[in-house]
Amino acid sequence: MKDLIGFFDSGLGGISVLHEAHRIMPNENYIFFGDNKNAPYGPRPLEEIRALTAAGIQRLLDREVKALVIACNTATSAYAEIVREQHPELPIVGMEPALKPAHYARHGGKVIVLATDATLRLSKFERLMERYGDDVIPVVGEGLVELVESGRAHSQEAADQVRKLLRPYADMQVDSVVLGCTHYPYLRGHIQAVFPGAQLFDGRDGTAMRLKSLLEEHGLTSDDRPGTIEYQTSGGEETLALMKRLMAWLD
Image 1 (cartoon, rainbow, N blue to C red):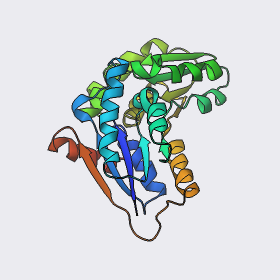
Image 2 (cartoon, rainbow, N blue to C red):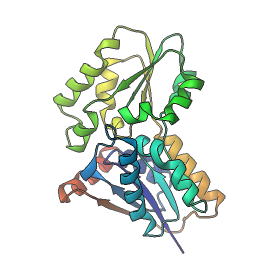
Image 3 (cartoon, rainbow, N blue to C red):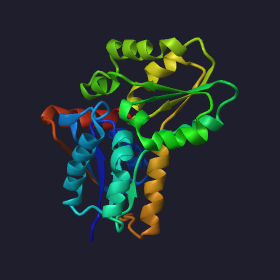
Image 4 (cartoon, rainbow, N blue to C red):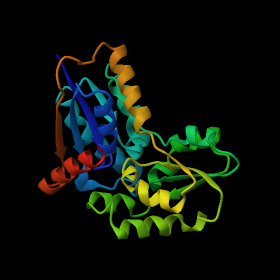
């Protein structure tokens, strides 16, 4: 019986989603592949993002996973609809910026959506903006993925870059900040420091709960043994070590 759940990300950010899934479903077996060699995806053209995502997902499909999580907002926006059409038999969960809950948490102020360039310019985000775009300020998180990928999420350099990006909005009433990239939960402290009164939203818990629901719906849950986690990367051994450190950091 197939028992692996595949997680794909352009890099390390999807570890934050994997952590949430493992927290609520500790008996499942997970395989995580991060395409760290080619991260970040955000500045790349759409067709290149699709090609890289297709190659990474195929690695997981070759392991005959029973479900797939595209733990990357950019890859989801670029490729989720395509892979769902190709594999209608497979439960597939993607990511999207948590704009809906952030919108409903507003009380007269602004909502900042911090995301990659690709996430903000692709059609999935445009559709979200049509429904929940009142008083929304999209901000490209330039340089943030690279800081997380290089293990510098907790550095002063990361704090300075977050402040540089968000400083223009620091004097506004900001009610909510959407972390629209799975790398950004590792920068929560820096972001909260700029907007101490704002609620921070990301899609990790909703994605994990959707995965759980689909597994139950398809009769694919595992609950009779402790689960395992296998890490893979297109990068090097140091990247594998960083994956495990980032997983542990969220505990």
